[in-house]
Image (cartoon, rainbow, N blue to C red; front, side):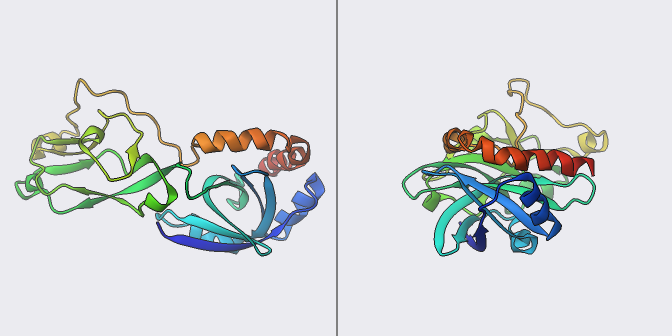
Length: 235
């Protein structure tokens, strides 16, 4: 997976007034958990544009005044009115520790069913996976060349080296329907398929849960910041 680098500054004052001033100066307060300690820092909002406003996913190298850490984006908040970035959570990752992440799907080839007049239906655009950081791909390729009208690709049909797929095996990923069905606005569903779960971009893995335990000790300091988030929503 590609890496993107961001330089940030440590936060010494975690209070409400300090957080408000950071946002007024177009600086984004951030927190990183998952490691031995919870780290608080900030950077100008422009530092995050290439990370957030893209369909790509990245491992983030965060340079905290010379202290470099690897992390992935875990959660972010936007102002409900201005849509400016309010806060970002990162999860620190380590080379020998598996991480859970959402990876975009890339369909490869032209399906036989499309050549015969069928219509493609893509049910999922990302898949949730667990893998070591060095095995995380930029995207998950799915070859649809041999998919005919009426055929369905489910998660259980997919397999990747060194990657565990975490979504339900019977969940549909891609299918080709006949033109008649497509015109009727219908999609053929598998009666045996399990209900699909909603995929959240900010969903945390097991490592995130561990990081939250560390973050609980910081609640006193973060209280001011959380209060500001609510305040920002009312502005």
